[in-house]
Image (cartoon, rainbow, N blue to C red; front, side, top):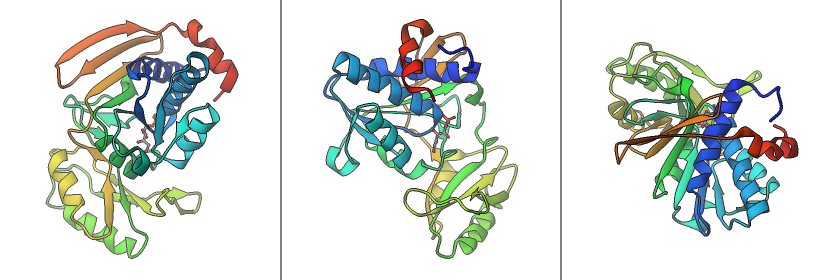
Length: 262
Ligand code: 5RP
């Protein structure tokens, strides 16, 4: 492993490497988006190329689709795959009940659709994303561009009656222009600091006209794999109530880094 890889990247890699152990021949696999998920896609690609693993990948963004093809994974759309055995994806925050905030990378809509259409969702993360209560990370809400300022005003009005600590909202930008999602929508980030009732907030936000989806993933994830910079991984199965520990040997995976870089 190159010396320049940061401890956080090593942690993300460790979680990703452990997660691909769950992937079996013939599976239809949802491929998440973000830097942690990118490690997972690279690990899967290596298994496909080196060990003949046969899988079909359903990417959650154009970025992930490009990477998956680049590393040799067969890619299809969700409508072709219909239902998935497993989705592996990163998260921006997760709480003790394995509820998540996602969408830091702007792919929350496809990510939620794909994860919901899967028998199982595995979250891969470094330890810094574990929180007692969700909300320090700004909650992404995808909105249609038409009338987005009105939608944002309605969101702010709705937040007044919600159990949250902050109510500031910002339109996500790409330079000076609005960030545009793969579906051609905008993202409004909600700076809530603490979300008292994530389930209620997720339901209420999705009732607002103009809101397409929000980044709260409630009761969707089944397993979280938490990676550490020294290769240790902790696996928590929320349904079984089981915790197990493992260690990833970085040296065994050295070729992955030299082959592909970042
Ligand atoms: C993208 C996501 C990502 O999973 C989330 O932002 C985590 O990203 P990273 O692994 O780069 O920290 O939800 O929409």
